[in-house]
Image (cartoon, rainbow, N blue to C red; front, side):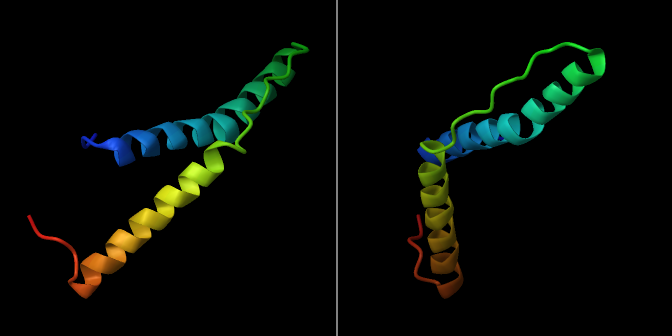
Length: 75
């Protein structure tokens, strides 16, 4: 599931942050509202994470393009 290297580690961190921000926080706020608890979970500030995520997605696309053209480095 995990592959060694910096890209998978950063990818998992970004995926966890996005999942928390867009799945856990809204569901948690909905659950608190249903329970009658007057608490609002704060959303994460994604302004620092999004450039890293977009850069990683660009590198992944570039690597895939290289592999399809046959110019990728072979081990």
